[in-house]
Image: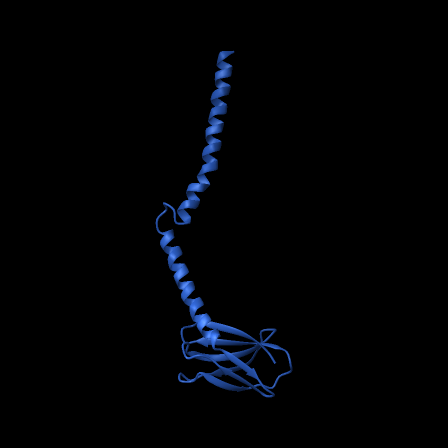
Length: 139
């Protein structure tokens, strides 16, 4: 009878230890991937945040001074010279490109002839650094 009790206690003790090990294992793995003792992921996270913040700053700087004025048959667009624009596209809600205008390096404003029905359109700007900025326009 004592052997049976001892076997049961050993089995239950092994089960408890295994359960605790399996419960704590994900925490050590999570720490490695979130910048804990795992090494390089902390540096990667900082680099990712830096790149995103630079893109966000450029986007913010671009949209600060962006002006879109719609008139009868013309869309007048003016932006700051911090971002060099390669081309501008006007796209309808369904994604169809209605107009593409290439911009010279020294311009920061443009008038685009636009004869469409009233509605919502998107103006997509492509910079010379392969970045896209999109602005909604009601015409």
